[in-house]
Every structure is written in C-alpha cells, then in structure tokens.
Length: 561
Image (cartoon, rainbow, N blue to C red; front, side, top):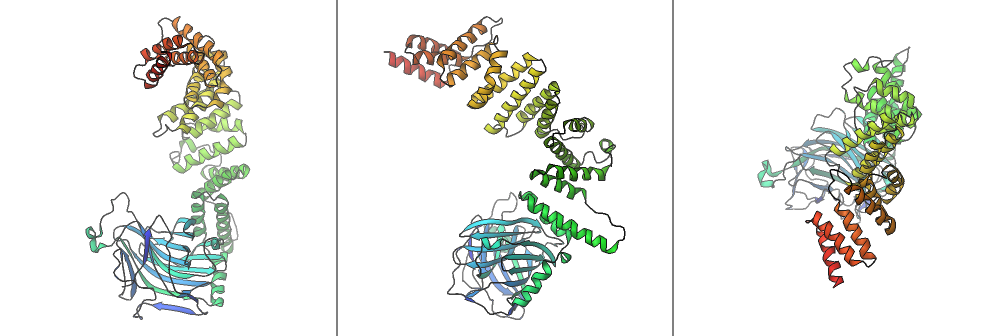
C-alpha cells in the first residue's frame, strides 16, 4: 500500500515533503508495471481516504472520498525538461473524477497540474504558493472512449504541450509563472461531486470507492535530444489537427480570452486550407457557420466591429446569399441562427448603421430573439432615426421583460429598469405624448429615489418638474428629491403643493404618508414641534404598521415635553 497527500478540491495545493531531492541525469526512465514489483511512488500505510497498490500489471490508485484531490509522488528526484508518456485507464465508479500528473512540484505548494476527466475533458492549472490559476479550462478530448487515455506531456523550457490519444491538445508558453524551473513529479486523482447527489459515506458505495485510475505505463524521458525532437514535432502545424485548435478556441471563448480564441481559429483555418490545397487544384476557403459565428463574437468583444461584420455576413451567406428565404426556412428556429441574428444587430448598432439595422429588424422581426439586448438596441436604433414612438415602445418592452425575469430584483436590474423608463419617457416626450412621458418619468423617478440614485434623479428632475407641474405625484417626488439634498425650503413648497393638488382631485387619491412624514421632519428641523407632531401623526394614521413613523413621533413628543 502506498500513501497519498490529500486536501479539499477547493484548495488545489498541498505541501509535498522530500529529503533533498536530486536532479536526475539525462536518460529515459520506463516503469512497466507488469514487470516491476515495487512502485516508484512514495508510500504511507493505513490511509482512510485512499488505496494504492500494484495489481494486474498496473499501478492502481483509488479514492474513497468525493470532492477532494490526492496524489503520490516520485520521491528524492526532480525533473526539469522532460517528456512524460503514460497509459491510464479511468474507472468513474459511477461518479465523476479526473487523473493526471503534477509537474515540477516544489515544497512550497507550487506546481502545475494536467488532468483528464472521466467525462472526456482535460484541463491545465498552475498553482503558486497555494494559489491556483487556470491556464486551460475544461476542453473536450477527441475520440475518448470513456476509459482509456494515452497522455504525453512535453515540458520544454517555458513551454508545456499536451498530446492526448495521439492528437495535439494544447500548447502553453507561460506556465513557468506557476512552477519553478524544476521539481518533483506526482500522479494525481481528483474526485468531484456527481451531479446533485448527496455525498455518501464510503461504506454505502460499492467497494467504498468514488473514483479510481489504473496507470498501466509510465515513462519519463529527460534526454534533451529526445525532448527537442518531440517539441519540434508537436509545434509543427502540419502535425496539429484543425479540430483540436477549434476545440481550444471554444474554450478560450468561454473563459473570455478573445485574442487567444481568434489565434486558434486562424491557425485552424490555415491548417485546413493547407490540407485542401495539397489535394485540390481548385481551392476555396472552408469556414463553417459555427466557426464564423465564433469569430464574429470574438472580434466584437475586441471592438473590431468591421471584422465582426465581415464574419457575420459570411455566416449568413452560407444560409442564403441574399437572406431572402431565412424567415421561411427550416433554420428559423435554430439557436445558432438566432444567436447570429442578435450578433448582427449588435454589430450594426456599434457601426452606427441604423438604416440598415432598421431594415434588418423589420425583415426578421418574427424570428429574432426578443430579449432585453434586442429591445435596448432596437430602441437606440429608432431613436437615432428619430422614430421616437417606436423607440419608446422598445424601451417599454425592455422594462416588461426585466420585471418578469426571475431573480431580477437586485439593485442593478432595478436601476436598469429606471434607465429604460427614463429613456422611454424621453422618447415619448419627443413624440409629443407628454402625459405618457410623465407617467414613465414618474416610474423612473420612484425607482431612482428608492435606490438613492442622486445622479440620475438630478438629471431627470427638471423634466419631471416641467411636465408634472399639475400632477400631485410629480410634485411630491420633486419635493422628496429636494428633501434628500437638504433643500428644505423648496422641498416644503413642493410637498405642500403636491398635497393641495391631491386634495383637489375627485375622487381623491389615497394620501402618500411619506409626504406628511417629510413635512413633519422639516418642521422638526425648524423647531416647530407642534406642527411636526401633527404632520407625523397623519403619516402614522395613513401607515399605522410602519415602525419608522411611530418611532419618530414618539421621539419628537418626548423631546417636546
């Protein structure tokens, strides 16, 4: 039995101890577990969370606990540049896990980790002084059968290359930011929670294991000539499959590395073009719709809008050169097409091509995804074209969608609704619909007041005061704003005017207790406690369950005694 170090998966580091490890000479170390009787890895007996053993010609490592990381290492040896080749069989035991290697491990929680999961993905991480950094997030493995992994790791100067099942997977050139120039090598397993299942004790599982891996073969080649040859082979684009680069591009897109995603796309296209050119006299570039959409998204993120337009137009040309039949084709419900339509709307908006954008929206209105992004961009488009009523309608649709979305009650989303309402009000005002504009200004003002958003309130108060001169709700909102900026004289005038306007209406609207309360506070500030008490008593009468009003009333009465 051989031991492993272990910690929670959320802390990807562990202190690995060794006694003065030595750098080994240049040679190829081969561990054929069918022929050796002793494991090259360190040993620790009676660990309750794992088992390791030599069995049936393999080094087997098994975890009994979910959601943890564990490893064994080759003691007293350090590796610098090397080529690691391994044959691994994964057994998920009904769960979910990954196996691989720790590279250049130092004794201060610093190493690189390359692992392959039972779900068919690989990743590469750097850990420095216990702090993890993702170098390559989970990326799909080509041609994975769910069990067998042939893994090659080329570590050369400040470059690391992974080759999985005979195909290039990734090349990273900045990995030394995590690891030192040399260090020990470890075989590692990681177990993850399986879906939403509750973690169970090992006694409740078959054989007590949550994940295991069998290392059938391991070699470590430290000969510089052999390393150089492998490095040369796997940095030559002719040996790299275009699909591998495309998978990596998708990973970079997910993690927000737009430049890297575009670089992998360009290399993949170059490799594919070279392959086609080598067998065909008539040559034409091949770009799939998926690739073109990805290129459009990445260039858009980088604010290269002209390039983004070129890619998105090429996408649609593959569907129909004139986009004539898209709305009636079987592609109209495609998620890919809907995403592309949204992307084109965003691109045209950034290029200020509003006439073209208007025509595009009207033509494909039935199949465009109607979300907040669409309505806000459409609203801007029609505003710029001075079609204010349509612009207002788009802003109102954005408000309605935002209000209906689950979980949209955080301050950011509520503030956005205030912005949409203010924009709708401005558009309605320009369209000559002043009553409807006032209604939207009031909606926005209430939102900003509740959020204490003074900057937005300051911008819209002149409009609210102008359009709402005879509206009691508008006057009360203006009065509340003046109170919030400690302009008590104008605040009092507006609040009193608001109350007079309300009382003159038939039927009379329900009173706003906050108006009485603020008038009471203004009187209290001026030392007019009798008037203050009278006003706050009205506030309490209209909102008897509101603790703030009752508390303030009691406080003023006590001070007046």
